[in-house]
Length: 193
Image 1 (cartoon, rainbow, N blue to C red):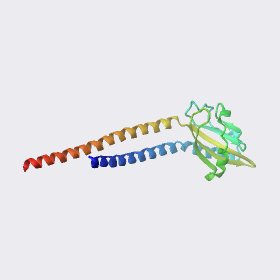
Image 2: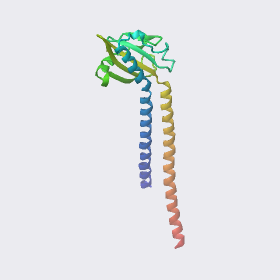
Image 3: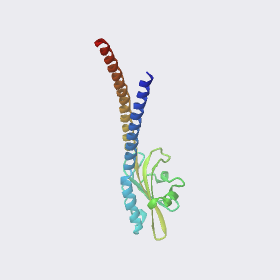
Image 4: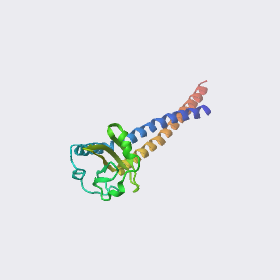
């Protein structure tokens, strides 16, 4: 009985680690792919400023409330963190916390990618890119609401959990059938004698 339990634990551990890896890779891939449009937009908008466009002249789309919309939005901050331009209906609620803009300075290619959760409590997939023109420095933000991505991640987590439960049940069933067939072979072997 002890060896059967140990074997079940070992097989269950293998199933758990394998499905944990599947969940981790799926979560990471879904979250990182949520940055793709923002990477392009932050770089495009930064290039426009870099070539002489005023932050207020950049077309960042229609004004939206990002807490209720899944559309992409943009914000341009000056070197002090003040908003120079934005496509957000209430831009004062979208100021960056201390330390974010200095972190852009030290990030590779002066570009920072992160999940941002302002006071609204809504999570955003965010890319900030540093740019400058003449003697002025700006930080260009492109972001979008993570609501749909979070739903997909939750669904993947639920599916992985269901497969894990079924996997543990199958491991137990296979072990039980293996034990039963072994007992049956012993009984049949005794009868033949």
